[in-house]
Length: 333
Length: 238
Image (cartoon, helix red, strand yellow):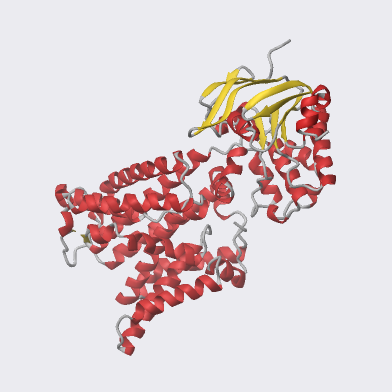
């Protein structure tokens, strides 16, 4: 079975055992986690998933996107809109959502990559697209305009076909997405395409000189990344049941998506996961602390300081350091 | 005479309003070493980049092995059989020597024989074999140049374009690089060599072209060019 070898080839038995334990824990978690802990776990998985999606562009192919809220927002709005207006469930709606997000990604990518925008200039382009999409949605009545789009909440109903239900349903949905993205990323990294991305990240000019189809590889990266991010958006819309252009396409949303992989370790498979645990854990801790100390606004300051400390202390991310401690290093990438 | 392996005909290249190449025509026959010499800014690198499809020419034809390749895309030019050792030894610094070499086998044509080519490259550059697992960024300048050449060979090119291969290298290493270029040529590789090191490159070249301000000003056999007054005065300070 070559796919199995691709998936676990090169991993030590120790790493595989740890991975199996983690997976077993995640599958069993809803059975013993309380509602609060479950909601935190859901947040962690969400950030691990979108982080993984963003990491394909930045960590693998070296293209900085600061506008990923565009794909999450489009995905969420389209699936929610189709459900709201026509009763089309998210399992079908997700296909439309993904198609539209991929199209948007291809437009951004074409403009950026065809005209060789690199680094911050490309990042500015991604911001511009998510900003003007936000303004467009502010005025688009089908999507509820600036007043927002709301999905009906029915307590106690579990309807898997329409992704309506309680926290456990959403937990497993995001767990499947996160595991799927992890597996996909592993396969991508092991593929020829993954090697080409690495070459482009290292030095795009040199990659071109050796005959790597640079433009095509970048376009595939943005398309896959946009597709996964759109799925996160669909999940997000049905979990929270409301969408506003001001938040769905916000700059802050885009930044939020980038944090887990940056803190965890850019370009690594476990970076986004570890980053999501650290960030969400810290967020919750500081919320508690602030409530305890009864000083409002402290949370943001603590959070900012903690990010600063981590970035200075472990510029390559927490995961490479942690992996060494656990004795399960990922191959140097 | 049979058709040349590479023929550039009436090539113009502009960067915005600035003209980098004007009506450049040249030919490289199979098995030749052809040198293009000229001062800094004469358009040598632009010419290489245009042939490789990285820059799009505004006019003219580039025919390689009967196929018009002007305008790229560059991976298709590699696929056609042209290799490019870029200026400044662009290795992938965080990848190992081995990974760098593997990356060179990007053209589909080259994949089937990847292992065999790898053995050949390792035999050609024993230093690379010794350092196969080392990150390319930690190699010395000379070793990085060998790696860049080896990586290019991994793509199994029929013609290799060298862009300033001696730039920034110690004199003994420069000699080594030229020795390798000549050896590759003796083994059957066609070579287009762009250099500021006029003397060394014209000495190993069968034929040469002198490029000034984007135009071919002079051409001829390597030895004849070296002996010409114009080259002696302008480039060798004699």
